Length: 376
Image (tube, rainbow, N blue to C red):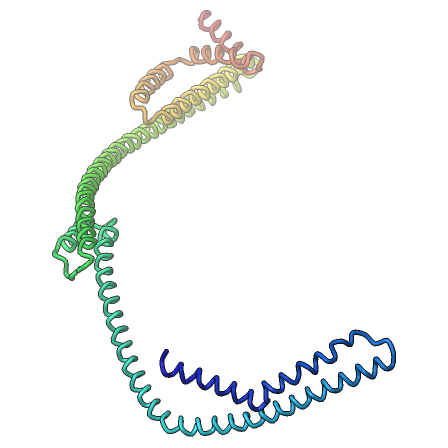
């Protein structure tokens, strides 16, 4: 047991002894026990005398209690005053040493803070060192990702960068850094091979597209040349058809002129011989009408043939065949006589409009002409 503990126990015993002395504890306790025992026999009250006896015993106990309380209160008041005086002197004594204690505590706090700051700085430097190493490792791992979609030249640059010796000291992370470098070199090497293959493929496809474009351009040029030649032939054909139409128109005009002269001659004959040749004039008019109808039919056939040839103008062989047939028919028309043309026109009208009056008139005129020719 140390001195402080012994002093504390001695003080406590002294305090207890002082309290016992103030209250005269031992002798008072000895006097109280008989007093309590004297009233212990009172267990109930049955009459006035019993009540008076209980009252007398209780008052003795109360007066004794009050006396004890007075002695305790006086002792406590004295102790309180003593405690206040002790506290005041305690503060005075403490006030002498507190400033120096605080000064020394401040020196210790400053030292502790400096040590803490130094430890924090070292910890931060260590954290930044590890963070920088991690950044370098992450940069190595990110090289293949940044190379995705790049050209082979860019990937080659990234591969050279990844293959170069580490530009930092990985220290305890050397294994992880080396693994990241190896992975980056492997991934970039594969990416470089793939990029070169893809660029070769794209270059081949580009050349194929250029060759295809050149072929298409040549085909278009050839088509344009063929189209120009066809248009030239079409223009020549149209010019030829126009010339044929003009020749046919002039021939028709000449024929009409001759027919008009003939009609005028016939008219003069009819005027001179009105009565005798009225029937012949009617036949001549019918014959002329039949001839005109035949000519219109012939012109319609020619125009239909021309339209047919125009519709088939891009089919040269068919156009030529149609041209030969048209020339043949034209020769037949040019060599046809009025009688034969009238017969053919009548036969055609019989097929197309057998009940039409023109068909009947032309048939009668053809019959009369044939009869006259036989009679002559």
